[in-house]
Image (tube, rainbow, N blue to C red; front, top):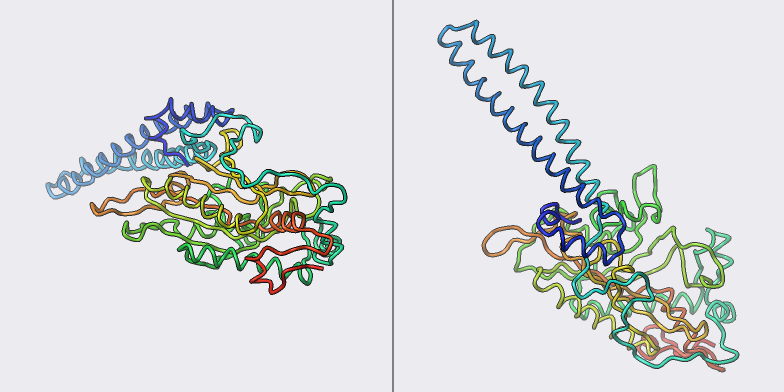
Length: 423
């Protein structure tokens, strides 16, 4: 969430950033500033009213001591009037603060100056590509057929149990999935990330803290009886560990990694372009989260990009890195890099990771601050990234490594599966 003072003091920069995103509700900026002006006016009136109440209350005591009972009674009547007025002003102030917060929640983050304006994914910048890509040629089998052929994943059984988008992994498929999770966690820990095992449900405050609410409310599974949401990513519970926390500067950066199941209602229809593992309602993902000093956050972002790049390099299939344009970035992000793997049988790129810097946008919602040597608390920067999302990694691994003798497992992963071929 952007601070209203930032909107007021940097209005042109804010407007330019929102135009980069092709954000249509630019009027919200003026509305937020106007609401804050009204809030300040009400606060001033309330302070003045309370000051008068306090002044008269002190005077009443003196009047009573001096035996001026009638004057004291008149003063009491004025105090009652001020009390009524103050209660009315408090209600107006509360409503004004609520309106301001609701308006600020609707304004997305401002893109970093390096982010291009673009409207959609077609305008994203490819900043790295590992290999030239080509299809496997005639006879190449997509992963959903390979999964059936080798009894790795049963999509129909998942439909029976829960519905479309909830696959059941079997045998070597389940073991390969577990091996990938363990490999990613181990590599993250080696890179200095502390592993945590968070809840897979969060409360409303946590959803607002990281920006899933109100922006993605319709995309999250909601448990109405308990007021809880199934998490769309481990970013939400892990980052909320630091909600309402003031960190010591000496303890920064904070680096966490977590494995979780992820749940997303927006998986959509199941036509040919979203078959198999391409888009699911439930999937597994390993996440990395960082809390940084503002001046270090973009160096940290590049470090995270290099880390995820190393993970994909070990998997031995083609991938590329894109810097997203303003029109394709998430609501909370100031800069995002997407990682895509090449699906050889489908002959298309599949997104498997996003690495983002949110600057102070999440930290302002979370009240996540750090205290420096001078003792003043200030907002930290938060970052997160997928390292990695499993379904499309699995899809690309199966498709890119199919041979006449079976599916070859990358050497780094074979150390975890204890088999190097699925046949």
